[in-house]
Structures are given as C-alpha cells and as structure tokens.
Length: 182
Image (cartoon, rainbow, N blue to C red; front, side, top):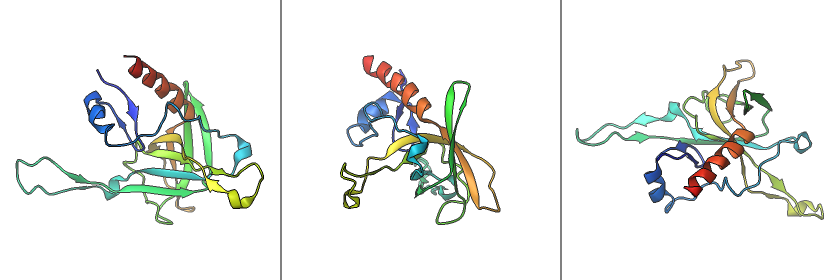
C-alpha cells in the first residue's frame, strides 16, 4: 500500500519509509493546524519560499564501484513581502509568488524546487495592541511549488507556481484520514 504524506519540503510515497522516519523527524501537523487565510485585510503578507535548488545539487563521485550514488543538496529558504495571486482551475487552486531572481541571495533559477514550500510567516500581537508583544507566530504551509515561469529580466524576478491552500489542506487531509483509518 502506498500513501501520501507531506513533510516540510517534499512528498514521499513509501509506507515503510514513514514507519522509520516518523520516529526521527517531526513533520508539519497538516491534520491539526488551522487553515491559513489569504484574506486581503491581512496584506502585506510575509512569505517564505523553501526547497532544494537543482543548480546547487552535485552528484558526488563514487570512491568504490559498489557504492550507491550519493548527491549533495543545498536547501534554500528566502523570505520577504512578495506580490502574489491565487488562481483556481479545474477544481484546484494555485498560488503564484513573484520572487527575486539572482538578487538578495535568492537563486537565479528555481529549477528542482518542486515539492518545496510556500510559507506564511505570521506576526502576532496580544489583545492590548502593545507593540512590545509582537512575535512570530507558527509558520503556515500555504503552497507546494512545482513550476517557475520565465524570468522578468528588467525586474530580476521570477514567478513560482504552487498548489494552493485548498489543494493542500482539503485533498491531503482526506488522504491522511483514509491512511489513518486503514
């Protein structure tokens, strides 16, 4: 039996892997966390983009012909207030984030970041409104990226496209419920 689970940066589909992995790694609590809001009143939104960039991935040389292939990967995470839009097509929702390309330590290309994540970085303040109580809230998984569009050379930006909130929370919560019921 194969299952679909989500961790911070990728989808993995093997059941036996999860039995060992869950003992060692904590995962995003997709089934218990509140669904993030993209309501316009909350703008500007502080976003984080994360994933493994193919341009920084290196296949390591084998020292022994019987050795398995090893790959060195570099994880990227960048944050900022990025222009975004939410689209719906054929029953799925998508997030498009416009992010720097080759500027501010952001990658020039986002190739290979499929399965990476878009996070909303929430700021929270207590009911008194006292700015001294301003803190970071729990990051909210808001998208899983799968594609990049052409680079805007003038603005040095790229648009990254990912599956949106409804696709992640509705669809995957149903799959998790099926998995846990089995």
